[in-house]
Image (tube, rainbow, N blue to C red):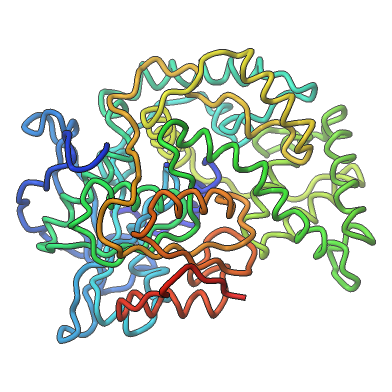
Length: 491
């Protein structure tokens, strides 16, 4: 099985059918029990077990070609307290949770680890599940290519060219599977996992993109859900899906950059970049504009220069977690002097190729994107004027602008129909999944959910960048089922 890797967080920055009808609405057919074996890879808890499960590649043809889903688990620690399985749903699209039972699962309180088998998985397309790979040109794998950062003058012409190259490569080399990678199919796979585990219902902790997977699962299989935690939440608008998540970076950066600016102007900070928060912001914008005009050579980096968009992408990545603020500050301080920081360590190309292919398949198959370069161009210019920190990127054309296939089904419409067993936890300042989008999911779920808003900064709340009040609330819900009576705020 796949080794623990620090590259799993990479997917977070790449970035998401009514009722019970349709090919995935019915309960999954009975599955053979999973055949557990010792997991491969360093750093895993010796208790962690691994298995594979065959699922249909195309759920409209359930007797057709099968693909494999890799699954992991650590059994509950107190058999007398056993409640079921807690599925750890990763972010992305392009992340996996195979190592999570040994990793973040061990941060869960003892009462939760006693009651649940902790279950991870690699979504369809992600190695070591049956994997996809578009065999992209390595020059198209960098984050400033995979996210549509426009040219210094705001032009999206190069973004459209990148979209066409990527879409053509995936159509030629991604195989039949890439057409069947979608959030709805991931949810259907998870119900097959549930059946193979021998569970009547699943509990889940979904993070980031995983909150959308959890919401879709709860919509398609409402009576198969037990206790559902959705952590760092996306807008579930079925007409836009990932387009809205990309656009949300405008607001997310504006919500979070002031926190970086306060930190980066604090007296005594060894990475202080300015005397006041206002000077941090204005200085960043000036430096990005200068690097747009005069990039610095950066041998060994991807790309091989430090330009304005690389600085902006460094900013975006660093705002995910306040612990990463020094990375942005060091880059700013070096660039001011006309130098560059050390080359950041990059994931292996095979990992980048796999993550990129799964991300492309998911975002393009979930919902149709406009093809008009002119429409994207206007939106980028408007965004640049209103949100200068992100320079128009959140309104730019991703690969889906050139995707040659129509979605095989409408995006799932998340509604308030189903049991009231969902708890949303959301940081107030989250660069990737801003509070504004979380409120949209909360609204869609209606009486099915309660939301805990946490006065904290960073992406991922529970047991990560949240606070003790939020952590206690989620832990209590998982352990006992007790949930706040109404939406609440953790100061």
